[in-house]
Length: 512
Image (cartoon, rainbow, N blue to C red):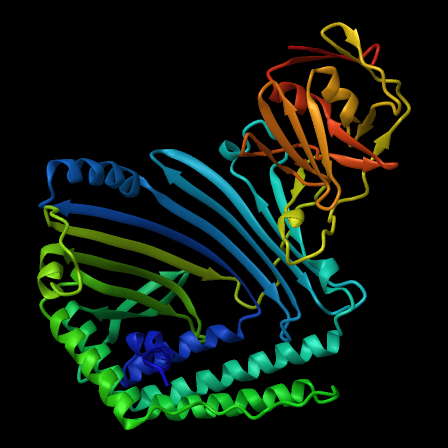
């Protein structure tokens, strides 16, 4: 039994006990938090901002901190979050529209998840990212997506349903323990109190405030360790948790030819508990002389509607540390490197407005195509490549001619239009501009050396390397009828060439 394992026991209910005590008001807020687990659909508007300040640092350190302060204090994150799932958790859709303001510049982005495991012949698990415009550079494809559906084909949906069911039951077991535990948890101080009312979406609703200052936070941690470990509640909980998980595993694989060994949570000896307590108390004694939170401490307001859900939440976490006090308290553990030690403060503020709980919510998943999306699958070694996009559109109806410095390039296999872009056999293109080509069959990699530059491409992969630097292709290299084709414009411009296209004659001119 290691000290890390003992610490793990304590972490299981730390978050809950920092937010709840044992009064009726505190229990009401706790129940509202637990009720979140029942939500199958909702929409949230989230805002996050930060404030950084400092004092007492050297001129050089202050200059660096000032540049960071300017960025952080003007930054703001806004999110619109929508989620819909079924009760079995085998279907799940999520959409996040986000905006980050950095030094007055708005940066928009989007995230989507589309998961449906109800049909074992056609499972779906797609994650999509819409890139900020400033990150796209010359790319015309705003979306990046990863589709794991192919790797899930053939998974027994009944077994997956069992997994989800057992996950819900295990979660309920943990929540039940927390409910029972906090009823008897007595810190000797009120953490949550009634704080008037607030109007949310036209309703006047009760508001409750959590408030923890620096002294209370340390007292809370000490009390939790003593109650959970020394009195054995956390250890008993782990015994029950392991037994429940064992039972769930046996039920999950009831029809499988598996032999599951009974797992028992190793209990710490009294000697190990005493050792941990001594180390912990020594640490906490030193921490008493170090201020961790500013005057606002931790403050969170909760607004609860008539159905018992938290529909509005706003909070501030005021972290303020005197680094000199920290060095003094932990002089044997922290090495002073001759810095001017000052005070640094970081104050985080956030609001969460939750609406449309358990109502019909429409989530539109972006429609992807070769023209607007890049695949991230090929970079995932853990999964076979699976193209979430439609089949390549290959147009061989045009006779495309390519000239390099006014010299016509002769091809055994003619250039093609693939998804609207010109691709040509790699060897003829590269050798026409004085380069060399190496083909690595095992990894389907093309290594090209041109004008003192080395370009590395992989078949069907958007990512490429130029002299070791990562870059992105709009159209990846392809294997077509046993021949390797590369994007002509990209390669030519990479080596510093100029490319022109004559639409009337279907002719490409490359000059370098």
